Structures are given as C-alpha cells and as structure tokens.
Image (cartoon, rainbow, N blue to C red):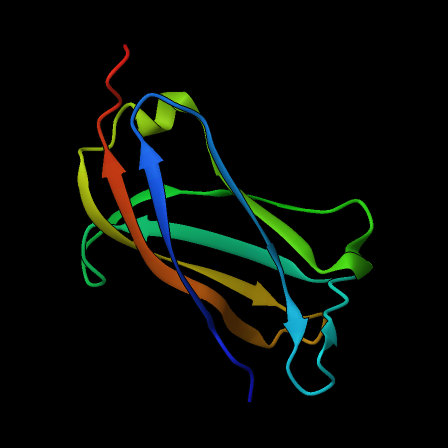
Length: 114
C-alpha cells in the first residue's frame, strides 16, 4: 500500500501556476522511478462536483528523479472563481495500477494587480 502526500496549494486568478512534487517509493524510501508512468490531475469545487479544471501534468526529462509537475495557465486561472477547491494527482504504473499520489486543497485568491 502506498502513501498519499497531502498538500495545500495557493493559486491566484489570472496568473500561471505550477507545482513540482518529488515522489518517493514508500517501500524502499527512495525516489520513485516514474519511467513508463502516466498521470492526470483535476481540481473541483467539491469532491463530488464536476471538474473545475484539468491540470497539465509533466514528468521531468529524467523520470528516475521522481519529479512530476502540475500546472495551470493564466487563461485557465482567470476563469476560476476565488474560493476553496479540492485536487488530486493520479499516477498509473506500466502495469495499469492507478495510485492517488497527491491530494489536497487549493485556495484560489483574486490577484490584486490586473
């Protein structure tokens, strides 16, 4: 069984957002080799509501570093209403096993400068 990393994020409307995570193999306590993995991430107002946005998910060029980045462009964050949201990042290994690697809340705040 793997651990899910819980984190709270802050996003400002009308700005680019990105967050990089370094995933760890919980059985060996070493960096997780993400070679052959796929991933997806979404945010929602409530866990049961329709999605607010899909994150762009990118792996590091060297997937053995365990680095994975989620991002939203300014055009996407401009359309999000300020408030509290939920998100998660799912990864799928080469065998097709899906794991929730990261989850948490996102506080969306209106940027002051526009």
